[in-house]
Image 1 (cartoon, protein in one colour):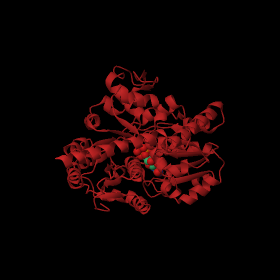
Image 2 (spheres, protein in one colour; image 1 turned 135 degrees about the vertical axis):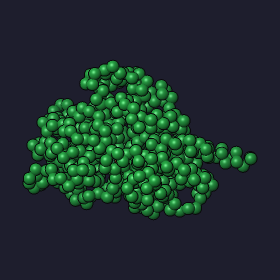
Image 3 (cartoon, protein in one colour; image 1 turned 90 degrees about the vertical axis):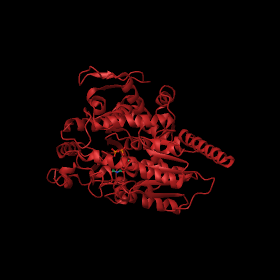
Length: 493
Ligand code: UDP
């Protein structure tokens, strides 16, 4: 650990243990910093290759007086049959490596227990994929919080699907309603994740994750009450789960440096992006990014390139290609020259929150990963939804069917991560959705208004007295009382 000294007796000490994937590490780091800003000693647990993702920010936070550090655990790549250095989901190029990656992840249980033994933290926030963390923490009498990284709506949809199985005996493209939810949510079989339909190795893990959640102390959620009030109530009252909505956690990043340095090293200088955006009119730029792990095939990327060229709107496009197509040039001859001034192309990693927060950005084409979706909402930006895998189709439904701050591009089929071989959306559909979102029709204007309203609600939620701020305060108070009670008990014994 950065500073091995034990915290003062009354100071809470929390462990924060994210899955080694940017979409999980980035928000968990923000959560750890939120705790540290309230006087908690926060220890982030990660592996050697992932520590560099946090180290600069941790240094800055420590200089500003936060008690935050990193503890490094060796990642057993060799024992799990992974190539050296493969410590992040981002390093996985072929689906065959996924089981090995999770084998290595599961081998972290013992080292984590050793840390509990050595440091006796007051609580741990562990990623949902560390399902064994609930059992490990309970051996030491430590409260374990689950961090899914997603919203409550999505938990409610999955709960209902499991309970009522409305997808049984239904044809692939036939629409069904997810039963018992506060809104009429429609979906079809093609949008369902595989684990509902097939018995995959992942299915077993899903059961373990669910079980560990119900036995945990509770769930920390990166959303805010006003975003999904009916679902927050359903989760607590119907599903009987304990949850604290403490987000949007990305709003913890207030200055340019913090916003620009989230996750990987950006491929572009942040000042260059800001200057470029400054030269554009308000709400005139479309930002396109599909998250940290998705990789589109070059044929699909070409469709996007052509749609952007034909559309009249400026754009910032973050391109990550399919691992195997990495060196293949797919952009049409002279494309980048033709797009000069109109489009800014960034390869691999962009300072996303910084871009979304810029007033010139008027739309976000997203894969609906929850962090991206919530970052877009927090910036008050309407969206074109293009879900690919994981729970992204549920997030699309939240945006388009409940909040009505976005439109679908028309991606119809849930895909296995890393297996995006088809062109699922043609140029014409992409172009149409850009026009619909960025144009000045009544529908687009109304969507923009709703998105702005949601962004304001998000900001209020994390301010002093806001819903997330208050839930977070009550959680910290609860932990303090529990620490006091357990130290008094020890004293009596
Ligand atoms: N991100 C970023 N720059 C990029 C791509 C992603 O900063 O070029 C960040 C983004 O802001 C978000 C996270 O990476 O915080 C991606 O998480 P999300 O849940 O949206 O998608 P995932 O990557 O898990 O599919």
